[in-house]
Image 1 (cartoon, rainbow, N blue to C red):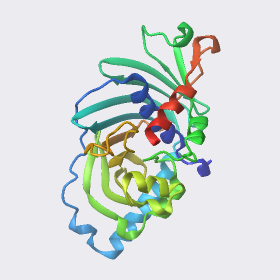
Image 2: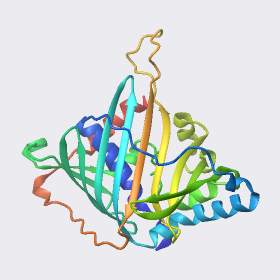
Image 3: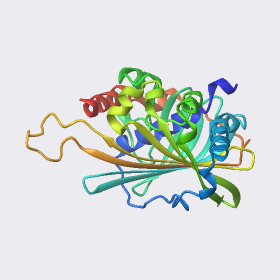
Image 4: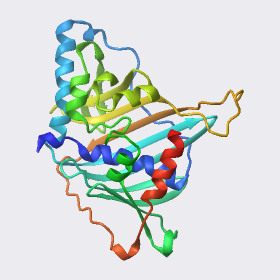
Length: 291
């Protein structure tokens, strides 16, 4: 069903962001973006720009048509001289939004599943509420409570909305590159947040546009997508009026790779008796960050 878009990618992003909040693990490796230097002069013609725009707009649906894929995700958050890096690898179902992943952060390996828009995480050797092995967050409930209207910053799943928000002048061809041995075309893209659902809130946090880099294979599918942005966070309620560190700015880089399209994905919820629901705690943390 093409209309459902790449729902799993959005859930994967939310899950990774949730894992950073819940585990508090850190790292310092900078993700690589390939040859993202000067934009190719070949992109200068109007016809070339229009063709590139059409290919980028179609890429999300073409990727979703593959139904499933293996994925790796690297996300780095930096603020006030400190950084947190989270890496994930696994498989996802574009149609159903389910995924199974192993997340590595701060030397810890975290088992993660997303099933029916519910995030489950298990840290080996660590127990949560009531001595349970798994924690869970209802992602849909959390998004609604935080007035996000289902929209995550950098959510690549909003395929139709993103396509409408990209115009010819927002797409530039960078060049031809190989991703894991696959020939790809690299584009620099700018998304007008005013044209996205929930864009007004996002504009307050990241500015008027969302910068992206995408790499498309010969079939027009996404092989890599990179987001680079600076997110403004509200000043702490306890901050002094002359505190120059408020409001804070968080630099975020996220790189998502897709491969092995059509791979089998088996995502099952853990037994209910082994799961502790921490949705309310996650929402409280989210509200503190918004206040």
